[in-house]
Image (cartoon, rainbow, N blue to C red; front, top):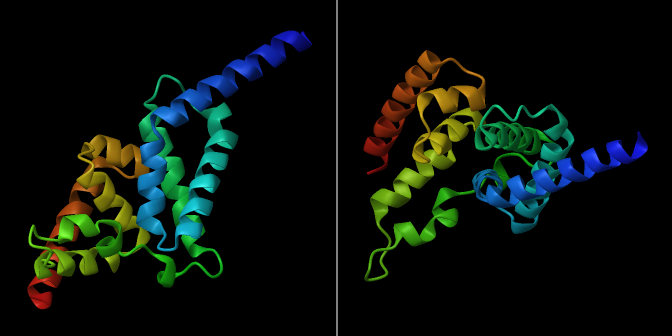
Length: 173
């Protein structure tokens, strides 16, 4: 009996390792979105991986692993951000995280793109997660599953978020 349990644990461990490696981009995107400091990003990525491992026993293989991993990662990131000493000053500035997109071919920064990043940087954790998943071209159903919302709520929140960004952008420029 003990050998069977050990083998199951070894198989589960190997399965988790393979799935996490295949989808590590999710962990890195979430860590980069929620942390400015490189050490904090590393800490957050490790915490996401650790929490995913602890939760893996409850993972239903009938469901999408990327959706499940996004949900774990975003929950950990939001908690990490709320924890002591990791408030707004550690939220990643999209301008820094995506700097290469903000620079024209001649090297001059595009003010509109920087203004957009400032708007995004000011978002609360839920709206930041919502926007990240939307920009990842996740379906409303996937976003709803990840964030624990209804599809209708996702559509409503995204509509409001887009309008908010438009309004903020008109003030910035």
